Image (cartoon, rainbow, N blue to C red; front, side, top):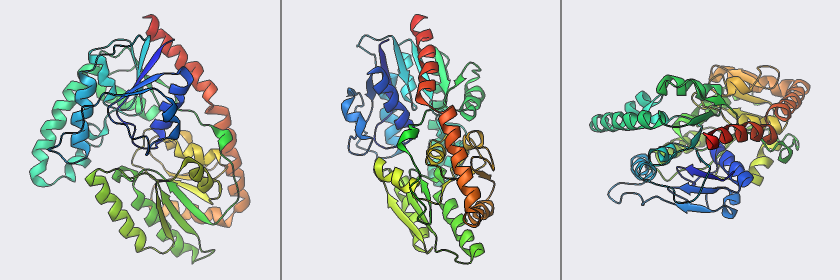
Length: 379
């Protein structure tokens, strides 16, 4: 089967990019993208055929969501594939807009574009007053185009039940199947406990690094300084001005909290090292679609403490393979429980590892993915 792929950009190292790379390697697939920076994404992409179809970010706009949206949206909306293919596998929005001029599209939906759907009111609220009418008008127009194109897409695979629910809610499509991304669990291991909690994620308001910092502050108060534990925050930082401002805000919060270490972006090897030597892995995004980080923490035999929202609520069995919490206080108390009950924490970590091996192998992923792709190819 000849698979070609579409991805909005390749500029970060995140969960979506991990899944994209694994599929591309499995099918020896070519990737069409609107923006590519080989220095800031996974090294494995250097061995994949990649064609940049973006026209370049509009010069009259600063680098950010608006400029990216215009470039990415127009690039895929107007692009026609010249290569021979059986199936186009689209990923992050708006790469699925490739369906406008091409058929046989299987959309692996990591999430519908949240800025115009579930996070629309939040995004609107943080805009300056004079920006809000323009944002509302633009989001409404993009929403119309997006829903029109999704009606035509031949098949949709959702990365989680949470994402499947959003697809049904915003697109009125009930036919998406759920297929979580896999984990290379053999690459992860527990290498000890160096007395720190780690939260690896790109820096963005919806990832809520400030939640983790506040939980850590409360943990320090209730643990009364026991053990001199640290909190390590790591992840990529976009050049987007709004995200840079958020990163600066988190840095200021970290500087005011003793024991918080910010590392920025780290290599895959160092990320595995940070997880493998941690006391536990924290995860605090707003209603995350799926979330590979909790699974990577489980693969590292570490307890994962995550907010009881979105994907983690499905992948973590509370009290057995990790903990689900509803507040910063709840997270702080679970952090304290872990350091006070090391044997229980160790058993939770081992249970998490067994869960990942059982449910999240790439072999199982590709059995289902290949079946769905061949349906589209034969249609």
